[in-house]
Image 1 (tube, each protein chain N blue to C red):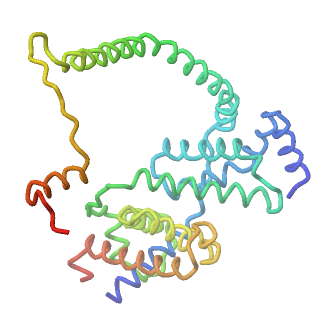
Image 2: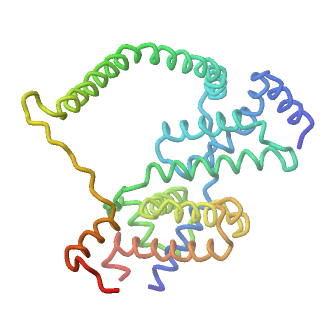
Length: 116
Length: 190
């Protein structure tokens, strides 16, 4: 591996000897300046595009809103039908006694005359 | 910093973009030289340089003027070049490609004194092949340390790494380069 160390060091040293390539394409600064001057206009155009796309989104959003409203209405109908059906017997509900009351009833059933 | 440079920057900040042009003209050769260390294709180099100057223009208000404008711009150039590396080198697989005749000749004659330009170009081509096989951060460090001759301290500032971390990464990067070199020419150097 010693030879490889030497090769790598020399390779890097030789590469360092090469002067930096600082050529600049003809009128490159004009290209940069054109981009810089276009930039604010591009930003304005972005806002314009954003506004336009918002307007375009109005119709699909309304359509989605209507569809969702219709879908929401459908489960509402099922809740209405979940009540007692026409013709079905009406069942009276009995209020369940309180716990203490129930306990005393059970105790009375076990031992009707409690010892003193 | 030159008084004229300061004036130009102040004018740009006051809303005169044309005042930025002399700064571009002055510094574009240096920025091109830096970008060519990171990108091979000329269209990529031009895109990098353009990005650097547009970024510099849009962030000019953050330039405080306590350090030279050149340092501020070169720091931005280095960051942008590293961003380019990260975007373009991710998931790129390194392939040991065949060596050209010049590269083989150079490897055969390592250690012999030569000032021929072809020799230097062959060495540069080999270095570029090895750099292609490194991770972006490792490549960035080798370029700054071994090709641009920056100090470890300067690199630590440029990369937001600690000095010891820069040293460790440079050491590992060189090890990786040696392994890649051995892959390129296994029969001679293993």
